[in-house]
Length: 72
Image 1 (cartoon, rainbow, N blue to C red):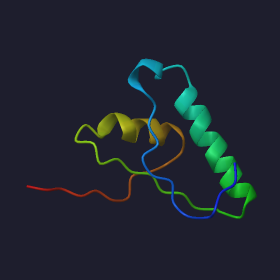
Image 2: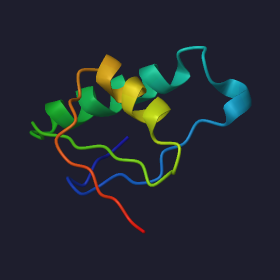
Image 3: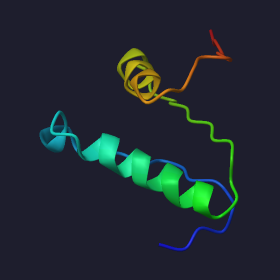
Image 4: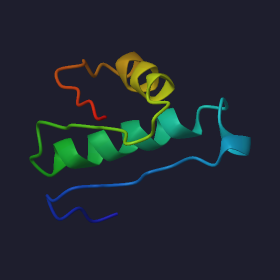
């Protein structure tokens, strides 16, 4: 899988396929591939109103919260 050094957006695991490790494997593979191509920093985000599950998922992979945005 060639990476251009740009961004990856809207990676999504269909709900019926969650909780079997597929998302974890996918993110780890993308991070490993990025690292092997000289990319040493990654950010992730969610525009979903129910963002807490996504935050917990990424925290389990070593990401930490550093930004949030609110709207009205």
